[in-house]
Image (cartoon, rainbow, N blue to C red; front, side, top):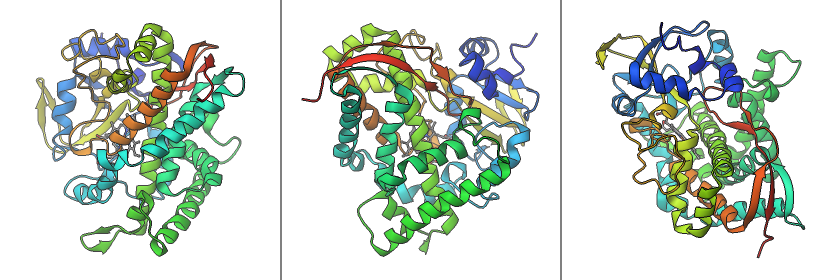
Length: 418
Ligand code: HEM
């Protein structure tokens, strides 16, 4: 009997009810690392589960294209997703192939270099401190839902600052991103409405918000990402309106839920491995390797899809032009051939060549920002959190694409701000 038909690897419902399918991936890595899946309701696809194969594929965008979509979604939802991109007219870099992709990537890459991100450190640290101050309150003791109260708030503040979203619009952008992109989680969808109509309205709301920012930054450019995008040129011509809008949206949507899910996955790992949290408190110089381990452990981007453009042989399997394949990062990040004791959470793991930020052509543009955002928050927590424990059952998000917890109830005692 086949190890899996693939449904447990791509169905949002399976992730929400059974969690991350590590057992299936472990069997696939050992017995069928390039595995043909035919899940009901989805297009058939090759499941790629080993580290080396994810690298080989990601470094050959001419053979494995991103342009036909990157997330595995049920056939029944394909129409809705087309509408989310305003009929397919809104184009984003993550779904472009070279050579076009390179020109668009160059637009924003100077804003995300380690040096440029370091210049944002004050804003990033202030966000972390304010959030932890709020948790501490007057008494220092309390209960919270770490997912919403902490992990969502931090990247929201940082990305809003970069993209010029005014503070009063932060809740709107968070709600819209959740509804448009996050998942098909029933809790996050607007209730009792025609889904198609709701999607169109949300698209228009987004458009109005960013259109105002774009016009403002064209008239009064500043030293921020919002201005870089609003005034960008491609081959000497101003970047098109749909491409500009797409860039705002991809930055926000690619940056928010991923960072949030890494933070919440990291906090859960610390609660379940208190010795590792103690170690971090005693050794703040482990912060950088702790962040890498948090990202490997949580692997918030669960998969990326590619379309095979020419016949290709991989581990003896014959992939045909036109086939879909899906790379599972969380599986590659537990590959026994690469990681010692891959199912142990070790904040001093070195080397840690995880693929949570991807690899090759589309390597995460925001990786430096994601690292510094997490570093600031875990630093603040390690310095001030005296004690913490789970205060209820964590709940998994209804998604097989950007995965993580939607609820992490916890109790804590935090030292008030110095
Ligand atoms: C822990 C947090 C994050 C994780 C795990 C993550 C993961 C990833 C992965 C796996 C890819 C590669 C996609 C592919 O190969 O097709 C990617 C691409 C991308 N990420 Fe991230 N990301 C994170 C945070 C961010 C942040 C904070 C931003 C921006 C503010 C961002 C912006 C992007 C963009 C624009 C791309 C597309 C790059 C391209 O197509 O060249 N990400 N990310």
